Amino acid sequence: MIQKKHAAINNRNLILCYFLVSLVLIHEVTVFFSSQNFPIPRMTSLILFLGLSAIFFLKGKKFDEKIIIVILLLLSLIFLQGMFFGLSIVTLFTYPLFVLMIPFFLYKIVGYKIFNYIVNIILYTAIISSAIWLLQNLIPPFDSYLQSLRFSNSPFIQGTETYSRVSLFFIYTIQGSPMEVFGINIHRNPGLYHEPGAFAYFLIFAIGLNTIIQNSFWNKTNIILSLILITTFSTAGYLALFVLLIFAALRSKIGINSKALILLLLVSIISISFISIDFMGQKILAHYETQIEQDMVEPTTAGRILRIRRAINLFSTSPIIGRGIITEARDFQPGSPYYFTGVGAWRTLSSYGIFFAGLIYLLFYRGIKNLCILYNFNQRFAIYFFIAILIGASSQRFFLDNISILLFVFGLLYSKQKIVNSMGSGILTASSTWFLKSQKSTARTARTGSFCPPRN
Image (cartoon, rainbow, N blue to C red; front, side):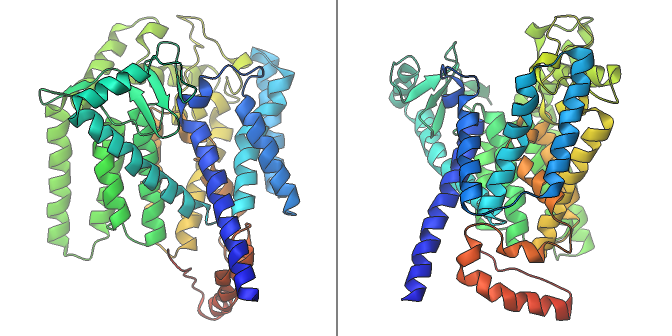
């Protein structure tokens, strides 16, 4: 009877965990919510914050002093920027709440298993959306039907003002223009995300997490995710996957000669792809040439290379305190040396300044390393995974959004010694059978100095 009661509690908690993580992910990546005309800006962020904070307190969770210190530092930095560049009292407080407290509440509610849920959610939504993508490319009438939906008045179809990106509820983003690959017109696969590059970023994020959880790069989930990644035709996604493949080759159990051969093969493939495939080498070179030709910064030429250039330029004007954490401190004037760019990893450097950005990078990396410790995986993988994320985030805004920043939170809250003690955190593990078994595992840890949690 007691076991059935515990099983029922676990099932309810599991559903809640998946629901909350899915909600935060969808809120971050789809154009469905961003295209809604709410009476209050960022209404969905406010609802998420209030809902997660209510669950946090109802579950009797407590604040960590480390997160409070970081919030106070962030408030101080925003206020300092405001003295020089512009300040909004409302945003001064809402920014830390939406950027830091939402992922903090989510992690404390769900627990360390949140990274497993992220992998599973990205995997299954990717499979569903890729099935729609396949039908769109193989069946012209189906593509025509999807294109007609872009201009419909259905509440389940929401998109940008130009209808260039339209969300089919929460499962797929309909894009209007195909690209040419080897002479064939084909739609890139955006998944449920706002564009294919964003989809590629989260696929890399899931592949890296799953590699740690499964203690191996070569597993069924990673193969599926990697194959789906190919359909995004994302240059950054391919380069990030290449970095993870280097780790997989170096850590394989084959001989040194075989490793050298595999690495040579990988380098050859990426080099040939860069030279011959339009969306890789030629696209990068085209952006670079455009950058060289531009003497003034113009929003109409906002390619990704140009935006990286702007971020570096902005950083050089205010390297210590940064500029542009909140909108009021940003400069959107064409030709200005302070022109704001919104690209993820580079934005972190230009917006937060060298010291705070350095702290963010460090704790982000530490979060990956902590996860490797948690799953008893090779800690050197943290370097490769961090580089892969930076490559993906060089052209995407998601580096400091609610899902990615969970790694920052994990790096902030836990040291190597505290990781084992954190295994009972979260609403799921607190009442689970595994949590009871983990007490024995903790005892073994004290004797052997090692810890290896169970895998899914």
